[in-house]
Length: 190
Image 1 (spheres, rainbow, N blue to C red):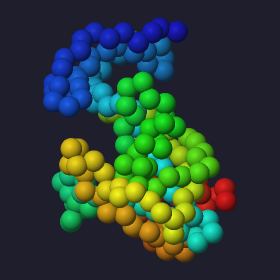
Image 2 (cartoon, rainbow, N blue to C red):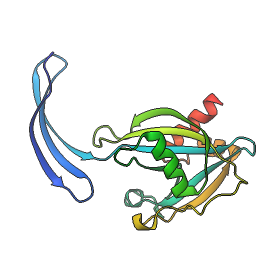
Image 3 (cartoon, one colour):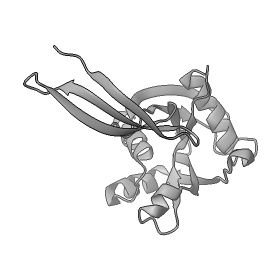
Image 4 (cartoon, rainbow, N blue to C red):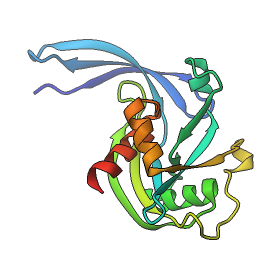
């Protein structure tokens, strides 16, 4: 089988992470070489953690402003989602998951379990998102959380009962992909 050949790479933006225009040749299903061009955003891999308190039957989610959702019709720009963040250089996904939970929620977790690793938008972004579920004690003592001020994070914590989450899944009102996937996984495997 013929191999993919990168013909040209052009940096479009290097503001925070690189955005490149990549021209390449790849074999068609018939084996002929075909030239294509894509814009690719080189984002580091990330983690997302669904926090559950099985005894009290509640989840802990975060709510924060997300500019891309605002630009795409989300009236307020605020999104309720699972705790998430980028993996720092040299960090393992599990370490990043624990760090992000502490930064964003202030809670320590137990029983951290990786359930999957997914490409969030494989046609345009390199990021591989590692999905986790962990237990937390909703009535337990915790640090402040709220995210990192130097990163402009202002995170509100949202507790959602298992029943409320099920209702929102049925109604189709959860529109964050990682949150939807983790809730579906939780309910389908619990």
